[in-house]
Length: 345
Image (cartoon, rainbow, N blue to C red; front, side, top):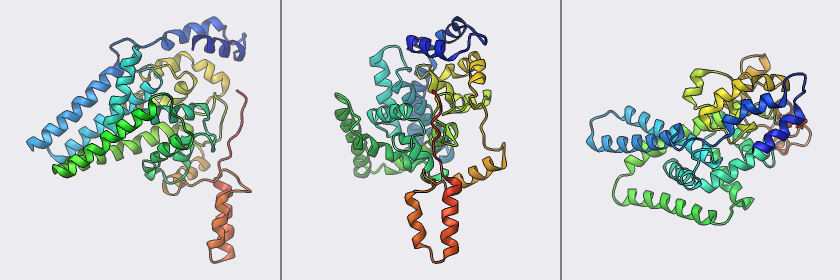
C-alpha cells in the first residue's frame, strides 16, 4: 500500500506545491495497521453488549419499547462500521481477529461477510460505473427512503458475478443457514416479537442510515469517475461522531487501509492535496437550485437512467395515454439522467 501511495503522489503532485516527502510523512502514520486495542474493537464489543442488553431488558420488561429499539439500532449502527473496516482489513492488525470481527458483525446485521466484502471491493474498483458498481444501483434505482431493500441487490450481484474465493461460498452458506435457523427457532419457540422489534426493525433503520451516508450522499451526483472526485467530503466534527467518519468518504476511497477513526485527521493532513485536485469538499445538496431539485427528486422518486438518448426506461412512455405525458416522461429522463464522466486518474 505504501509503495502504491508513493507512486501515486510522486506522479500527481506538482513539486512547486509540496514535496513528495511532505505528503509521504503526512500519510504514513494513518496507513499503518491499527493497534490491537482500537476504537473498532470497542465498537464490535459494544455492539454485542448493547444487543445483549436489549434482549435482557425485553425479557425483564422494565424498559419502554422505544428505548429498546433505539439501543438495538445503535448496536447495529456500530457493527456497520466494524464490518466495513473488516472488509478492508482495517479493523484489527491480526488477520484472523479481523475476519472474526467481520463475520461476527455480519451475523448481528443479518448480512453475509463474504458478500459484503466482495461486493464492496467491486464498488471501490468501479465507482459510479452503472454496469459494474453495485452501489450505483442501490443509490440510483429508487427513492432514498426505500434505499434499504435495495441492498438485497448485493447478494444477487455476488452470485451473478461469481465473486467468491476459496471458502467464501461455504461461509456464505453457514451464515445464511444460521440466519434461517434463528428465524425458524423464533417461530417454533415463539420469540418472533423479539426478532421483529429488536432485529428486523432496527436493521431496516440501519439499512436506511448506511444507504444514505455510505452510498448516496458520498457519491452524488454519481457522475465522476476520477479517483479525486468520485466521492466527497463534508467536514463536520459532529457528523464525524454520528456517522463514524463517513462524511470523509473520499479519504476512505483514496486510501482504503485507513481506519474510520483516522479519516478526519487524515483529511486535514491532506487537505491541500485535495484542494489542488479539485476534490468536492461540501455536501452539495443546498448550494444551487439544481442541487436542491435533484435531492428532492431522489427522496421521492430517485430512478435515474444512465443514457439520455437510449435509456431503456424510455419504453415506458408507450404506456402513457397522451403524447404530452409521453414527452414529459422523456424530458424527465433526460433531465435526471446520470451519465458518468470519465475523468483523468
